[in-house]
Image (cartoon, rainbow, N blue to C red; front, side, top):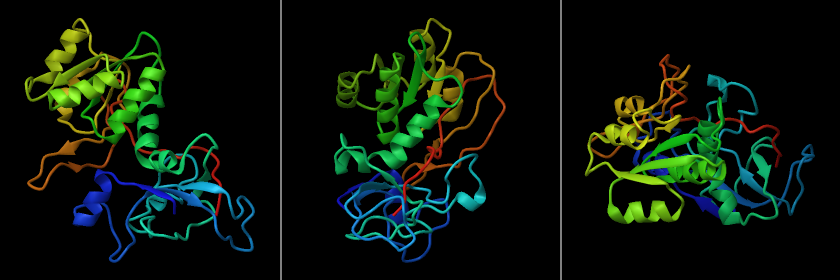
Length: 260
C-alpha cells in the first residue's frame, strides 16, 4: 500500500462503536491505494506494477445493494492499514494516471458516497441548489462535485474558520448552525422560501433537512448522525416516502472493476 485515507467511519471501527458487524482482530482501514506486487495464476485484469485503489465493498460489483454484498474492508474483511494487502480480483480498480496515490486513496468511500448522493435521480445542474451538512469528507466532495455541475451550494458548519474555508472551496452560502440552531429557516430564507433541490444529510437532524427541501416527487434515503455521549453515530440508510428530493446517500458500485 502506498497511501491510506482515514475517516470518521474508521475511528468508529477502532473505538468499537461501528454499528455494523466487525470481525475481532480485523485489519482496519477501508480506503487505500498502491501498486500491485504479485497476482494469482488466474488473475487477468491487472498485473504487477499496476496502480490500483481498493474498493470498500469488494463483493458489490453492480446493481442494488444486497445483504450478501455488505462485507466491507476493515470490518468483516481485512482492510488496508498495512504494508501489503491481500485483495480479491474484484476488490480493486485501476488508478488513472493523473491521480496520485494520495488522491486516489481519498476516493473509494467519501467521494463515491457523495457522487451517489448527488447523481441518483436528477443530477445537479446550473440553476439547481444543493444543501450539504457539516464539513466532513462526504460534504466536501458534495461541495466540489455540485459546483462542478454548476449548482448553487449551501453548507452548514460550526465556526467562522470553517465557514471561511468552505467559501474558499466554492460554497455560495454558509450557515453557522451554532448561531442559527433552526438552520432550516435560514435555508428557506436563502432560497426565497422555496427550499433546495437536494439535501445531502451526513450530520442531521433529519427533520431540519426535510424542512429545507423544495416539494418534489420522492425521497430516497438518508445517512444522518445521531448524537451520542461519545460522538455522532451514523445510522443505516433506509427507503422512505416523503415529498422531497434525494436526501443523502450510500456508496454504490461504480460499474466494472479491475482485479488483483
